Length: 487
Image (cartoon, rainbow, N blue to C red):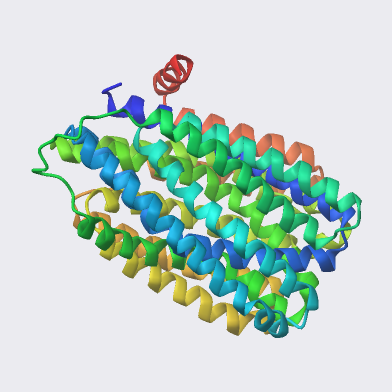
């Protein structure tokens, strides 16, 4: 599988399936539990999970990106022993970081509980900090190793295992009135199961190599740690801005954390689709840059954004035409977050598009630029969230996210332009297609009040317009299907 387009399509396919699985089962997870568990306990669990996600991302994201990039580069140069050494070092570092953060958080659990004026939070944080954090940090690194070896089907498999285990465990415990603890236990126990299976699979994936190999041209630990450091900042800030709304709104009303948290999870499905393509782009682009094929990089970069936006467009339209319809399926009380959800969907679409640009910049060794860009956008979001939350509540948090996202993508566009890359006209055609589909369907919804007709029209217009202006061609679709069938 030497064709970069084939690697990108195959890698994106399995990562996309994994993220779609996460979105679907994740949505079912919260919808079912929202019907079983009181919103107060959902809010408590949301605050704890948001805090965990931020910490895990800060602790693992740098290593993840470095492993994906450098293992792909080392394997391209046939430095298999150096690749194996890097994996061993990264996993030991991940274990040390995980337990270190877990112990610190465990000791701070009572103080955090006092801040939110909730006695339950202390025990929830103490439990999850010693199980979920260490195991997930290692699992995230193992996923990066799978991606670097272009075995993203393994990522799909362990994702399904985690999501299914989490759902079953949490529901069973919730039925026995464990409330917020049911959710926390579901996350933690499922993570241990995922770790055991993913590590076993990784051992079979890494090829056996002789202990004699020329280290010339190998990547040093210092290089990897420097690269990781900037990505820790970038991914950490990116995750913090996504979770800050749940953490801030919880100060004012713990139930509002549930409303905003569920809306964020639904909107994040947009990001999941785009991140699938971004993750697959990094090793594919790195290999082509290592070989000196810059034209191939330009091609797969624009193709990645175009395909991601086309597929994402259908999901975006389903969510923004009438967001209250989906939220009402959970509970009438969650409809309060419908306008916030509409804004968040657009914000996540913009943010995740800039994430694809970030993958290209990482492949070009511009990690420092990414860290600066992400920090600027995230700081804007965090500051505006503190200002707008007490004034506009959920909509204020969503507007803060949208504003920072716009700044982020503008800075990302400037950076890739400086590296000699431009966005092709086809990408703008896709963006126009989504916009036109939304405007027409929203008018139909407003005039006739038919949600089903508006949604069907929106999806039809997006598909027809994309093909009509040749944002994507039948030939490209058939090529992608052929690659997927080969599996």
